[in-house]
Amino acid sequence: MRALVLIDFQRGFADARWGPRNNPGAEAAAARLLARWRAAGAPVFHIRHLSRDSSSPLAPGPGAAPIPVLAEAAGETVIEKHVNSAFIGTDLEVQLRVTGIASLAIAGLTTPHCVSTTVRMAANLGFDVVVAHDACAAFAANADASWRVASESDAHSVHCAALDHLHGEFARVTSAAAITP
Image 1 (tube, rainbow, N blue to C red):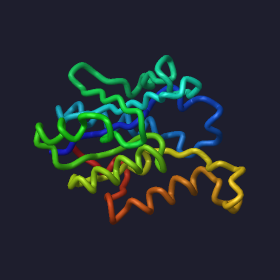
Image 2 (image 1 turned 90 degrees about the horizontal axis):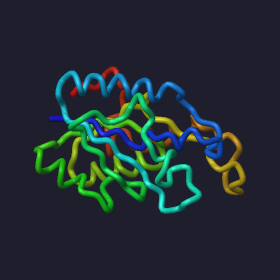
Image 3 (image 1 turned 60 degrees about the vertical axis):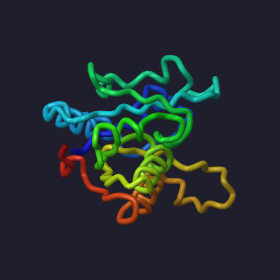
């Protein structure tokens, strides 16, 4: 059985302070995955980042709320986290193991941060992981980092590099349309 894990699809990521973002269709692709999982009666886990920094767009409050198209339905699990990995400080692994889930389909925000960290940890814990590249997105890298060259600050490049680092070692990266419950 494969569970769908939706990471940090929260209103706070619409805040302008994050900067330019790639893949404006990520939420729609994730919503199509969610519809397939719901139609199949397959398990869905919604992961929410609750920042401990009160000035963060993801601090508890309106920014921490899910975007409406990806809000949980009755019976779907919501896991709240305070760090990048959905496994640290949560009972996600226990819930997956107790229900016999060995395979995860992952989509979310942002590709190089919470998605990547969760995917890497899931693989290291022995889960089979597939990532929906078109149901994830990244923001441009910090433009004032002196060790970067300008072309690396592009949000799409950041997204692709993060996926490239995952594919083949920690997960299989494919389109949302190719992933089934």
